[in-house]
Amino acid sequence: MIRIAICDDEVRTLRDISDRFARYGEKNGQKLSIDQYSQAKELAAQIRTKDYQIFILDMLMPHMGGIEIGQMIRKRDEQAVIIYLTSSMDFAYQAFGVFAQRYLLKPIKEKELNEAMDFAVSQALLMQKALHINTAKGIQQILYQDIEYVENAARALHVFTIDGKETVSRLLRNSFEKDMELLLENEDFIQTHKSFIVNLSHVRLYGQNQMTMRSGAQIPISKSRQAEVKRGYLSYISCGY
Image 1: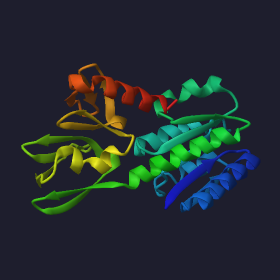
Image 2: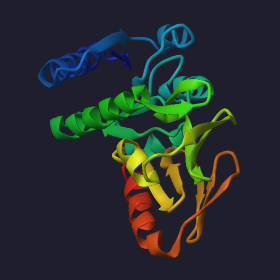
Image 3: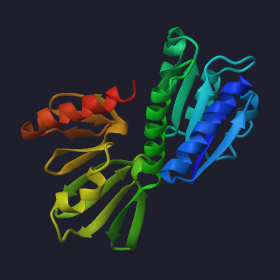
Image 4: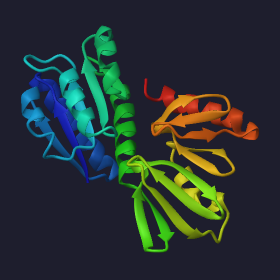
């Protein structure tokens, strides 16, 4: 189940977006829970108690706007998808610090909304996926969204997560690439080196020879992979604009 919050003081727009998401869920066989809010303060009161993966926010609303709501969301959740509805792209720069993934200009075009829904749902599903690691204590489950990077060292997986923890697997029976095959199918992850895979959503600085992660860890980019990593990184960040 993916939980979605839609907030817009224009009732017609609110119902239209909600109906379109509902039809999208039915068409794609995806279970969606959609809550509608006509006032930003109503949503603000629910952010701490309801676990939404997707937020559709009108940028300009009376009393409390979408930017303020976005800031509240980001203090609690860095991974939730935020999509802004706006009557003018002149206001988009105000949301820079909120790291919104999409901006939809009103009146909203069907093609652009469909693309935004595809992106939002795929990201929400990614948040629910997990890597299963066979450790000395048993099988441990780590959500993809929590993985900062994975290192192959001494024939074992070392999974580093955004909470600063390191999980170490038993000795690998297969190659690093084989064991990480499913992880690498996700566009958030890319192999930078024969021994490293990074989560692009947690990269803070990209350089030709290395990536600096949110924890400060510096992950090498091998010469043989520099062109591939560059293409993958630029493609990934371009999807956010």
